[in-house]
Image (cartoon, rainbow over all chains, first blue to last red; front, side):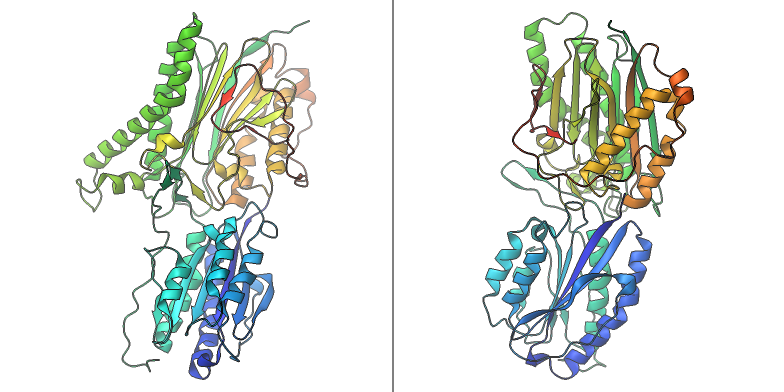
Length: 224
Length: 324
């Protein structure tokens, strides 16, 4: 017997536009969210929460390649260095969502995309690669748009669900709240049963498994 | 020498998932498998998450309505079954009964909501109300000469034949990934019902064990092979100790499964022994194993094209999947 894994993959934009306060706040927000992820995991002992991170800039690379149990997960800061090759990062994710390496028996994986800009490569090809995998189609997806320059259309397409919206993070406080929400609500959504299925010619509309929070404008903080 | 078979014995057990406020499964197992007292088994699994706050009620309605329709179906069979009538019943089982079951459940749920409306009010959209009660359903009816089963959503119907072969006649060709499941709350849910029809022409042959379980059991195993090993172990213990001999152990086994799956875990089973089996010398000498499964076997490679011949007249609307 075994608990079923929830694979959680952070997909972080580390292009030059993140330089300065944005990358600092992103590192801070994820580090601060880890205890909350551990708490969610403790509340759901039947799920084994495993974390990984991919960063994308001029190239996409694994920041944490091997899945790490949340209780053992420590954050190493990421640093910005180039353009925004989201497509390459999505291809990396797609490779991990095939079976194998994904097991047949698992809870839905979570892909959390955080970006402040517009992709500079063929990101749609990467998205198609994810859609071509069974677990990629089932994955719980969350998207966080940092600042006004983030291409929300890209993030919306990544979500692949018209009922979901990218989460706006226009200030450090909003970013922290968004990361916290992505770290916890998405994990809960991945480990809860959902009525779905296909009747007749098309898919039935599943219940929205989770809804992003409303993040209030925050006048006290700087706005990106 | 052919040893005559005893009547079917039944057992239901269920454990609540860790951290859950209530058990959202429901089950019924009754009857001896005779024409006058058909064997009727069912398990229903309310979805349980906050989006389905009344799914415990939905699961109870599902199981109860199945028992009513299952008994009605068995009564239609009767002792005298001319071929033409049986063909008609086959169509009824395949097409009409699933729709009646779903409509029964939806009407029952709607009636419950109207009597005890939630904050959305008694006139909330029907589709939204049904979702609050979402549940799966697995059900089986066995009478002399025929075994029929239905399944909507996840869960397992596991059958062990007289030669010890374990099969899952209603397993989908490919299981749903993650925790997504078909449900009684979906529009036209009857179109998602899988049906197994199995004539039993020889009364001394055929299934010896029928086990209906909610997905909390199967999902506690790392592989399909582990679940099959559990069923094999269960059958061996039933053969050695009889159903009364394992009745107290079953909840403990389910609790261990639930600890891994985290889900409510329910088993409704029926066992048919050869006369003379059961709580006798074999039972007394059977080892007191802590649980019916050993180390989980390695998953086998993808099954090949070969498949054993099915009994005459056996039909599935889904390709039967063997797990052995």
